[in-house]
Length: 355
Image (cartoon, rainbow, N blue to C red; front, side):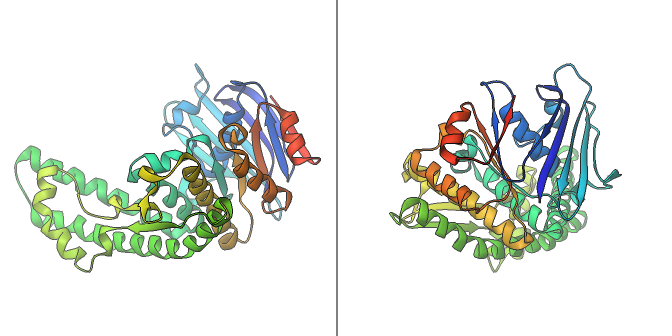
C-alpha cells in the first residue's frame, strides 16, 4: 500500500497544491516555514481523519477560509480515492471511492501510518493520557472492534460523569440510575483491559528487540501496563468508590485512568533516563508500532519521519537509514531543509518533493 498523489485545498498554509509521490522514499524539502510538517500532517489526516498536530479540526483550515479539502489516491490492490472535507463550522466528512462513511471510525485502520516526530518525547514527559493516546491509536488502527468498544466506553463515561455532576447540582442521588452507567463502564472496561493487556504482551518483545539494537544492549528496559481493572476485586472497588465519585463529580476508577510505565533498569525513564536513552526508548516504541501493524495487517504502514536529521543523534539516524536501505519499510516520507544531506545519506532512488 502507498499514497500515489495528494491534493490540498485550503489546508494549513496551502491554498491549492497537488503532489505526486513514489512508492518508496519521498523527501519533502523546503525552507523553514514552507509547510514541510504540514504536508506530513496532511498525509496523516487523510489516513486517520484527524491532525497529528492539533486536537481541533478547525485549526487545519487555512486562515480566513471556510473549509478545506484533503484528497489522495492510495494504491492497494487497486486505486482508492480518499477525500476529507472539513468545514469551519465543524462538519467533517470522509469518503472512499466517492462513498461517504456513515461513521468516521469506519475509516480508521484502512490506510495505516506511523509518525516519528520531534515532540514524541512528550510520551515520557507528559501524563498518562498521552501514553494512552499512543497505544489506543495503535489498537484502533489494528482492530476495528477495539475502536468501537473504546468509543462506547467514552460515551458511557461522559454520561456517568454528567449524571454525577447533576446529582451535585440538584442535591439528590439515584443509585439505581447511576448503576446503569456503572454496569456499562465495568463491562466495556473489562474488554478494553483485556485487549490492551494482550496487545502489550505481543508488543513488548518487538519493543525490546528494537531497543536492544539501538542501545547496543547497554541497559535493560521494561514496558508495564498498569490498570485498575487488573485487580481481582475491581468491580467491588468500583462500587465502593461511589462516595468518592459523588464528591469529585467524576468517575475516579476505570480504564480511562490506565497508564504505561516506561522503565529502564527498573527505574522510571522520565526521572533517570538520559536524553539519548529517552530518544532510544521512543524510537524503539515507534519501530515496534510499525512492526505490530505490519504483522497484523500483512502490509507495511506508511512511515512519516518529521525533522529527524536535526532532532536525532547520528547513531539513531544511522539505524533508521540502514533500515530504509535494507527495505524494512514501504513508503517513507522524510522532511529535510537540506536535500543534499538526504541524497548523500540515502543515495539514489529518492523522490524529492520541493515546496
